[in-house]
Length: 278
Figure 1 (cartoon, rainbow, N blue to C red):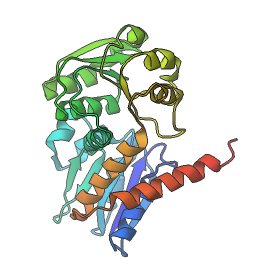
Figure 2 (figure 1 turned 120 degrees about the vertical axis):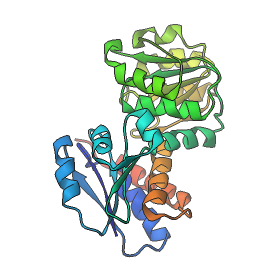
Figure 3 (figure 1 turned 180 degrees about the vertical axis):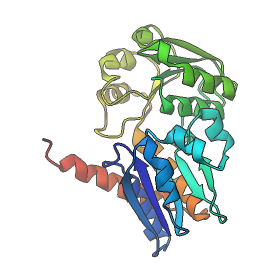
Figure 4 (figure 1 turned 135 degrees about the vertical axis):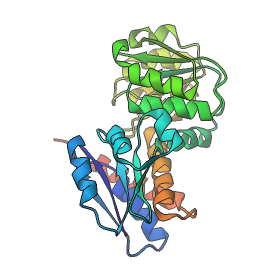
């Protein structure tokens, strides 16, 4: 059977490493997992060209909304969030769309002992922020959730996701972050380094931090929070657990070797960290 990750850009994706480790550990010798650069307008023709030997696809940006449009069925989680990162082939050749990012976030947080936070800040206004809101709902967030974005005028899709999730959401400018750190958890879905300028304020607060960045790691913000004893979760555990959920969906098996996947992913990140930078 075949599977692959699609997106643009996709060349540095860890998915082939994670899925490949799972397939080897599970004894799925006939399985292959590839990597394909694919823009949004290329997804439909790519799907049409796939044979019956394809089990599923992992999808990165910009394909998550388009995947929902092309799927025959969409899971409730993907529909609520507004995006799918997984397409799974059914026996009749149809496609099911899923969102495993939510499970990746919830598992990463609970693995670190972060459960049922009372007050949360989510930084960023993209697809990962919407998945973070769904994860917080799954964790039974006990109080208000505030979304902080650089451009509050571009948070409509995330606000709609919150409405579908039944989650009360306040939206405010990112520049007000340091005024709002009387909170239990900060979830940063910002690009690498974007939260680092707030590291001193984050370190001085009592908040835990989930930063979706996985390379380079740790970020300065993560290092600062950890340095004063706060709990910190990076993007790799999220990536690991969303991939494990994809393996389960694509193979139909529950014996997914998470620790083998973790070891392979960490080794690959270490290898990449040793590579000279241009």
